[in-house]
Image (cartoon, rainbow, N blue to C red; front, top):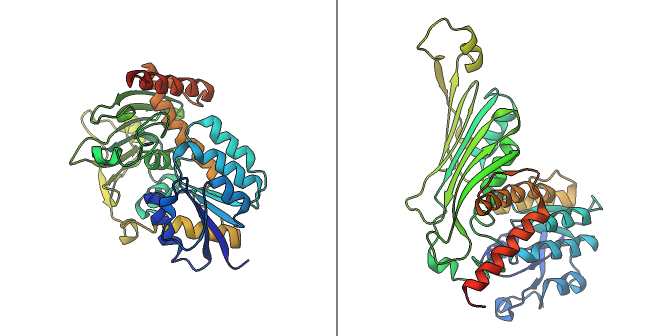
Length: 369
């Protein structure tokens, strides 16, 4: 195979951007499009289908890019994987763990590529932070803190599609939508926490039924702790990602300003050996080359990697199975805020689905439906 016939399922605003990027990658040939809204398919020359299932069954494609509303991701991915069609699914991979595990279970043929659109994994600064952590340059990790309040959204954004900002249509708010990227990066670099507790604001800044404000504490195996603050109602927002370890501290501002302050002597060793009362290790600042700045290839980078995995067997930047981690973390944070109690991970997915259904029912009652 030297050309990959790919279909796009769901032709909303994000998918239109994906369409344009796929057209610039020679090995991809967009041959089919699907959307439940016929108007979304106008002015495109490719074969058109009224829904994703029809495209999967009759489109004659080698691969699909799924960019539908969240609740459809799992069923469409399962259908494609069962037909040995390669799958690239937009984030989140699903709304809850029960659906996400169905996708993983359907991925029985490992020659079929299953990838997730976690494009932030291509950002040079995040790659550099991950490399430093994995090489032990920070020593024993002690604390992670991420303030992400630059996801500002207007009321017009939430009104742009009827499924947006609803439990029934979207399945959640900032934790499932915008923050899926940050939660993926957090667990990709630091691993998964074992317990979370959060405060969740539902419709705090907007007339919506889902969460748009979250403040949380995270507890990791081994004693590391974390804090997470995010919202879509604050401007000017902040984006500060900080990881402290025994050998120093990394601070990443605005996704590309990376600073590493290194201890001459690891903090735990200095604590044991110093004879002084008021002191701390001497430090120096480590500089980084330009490779730690910039946006990286983002969505196009994930698409090219998807291509290379299909044609050359290249390892995936973001395997679909890894989408379960950020999903579970976001679900746990929401569940903790709703129940007003700590939640342990791994998450009880069935219990979370019941919580989600209650949120949907309560929202419908408030609307008088």
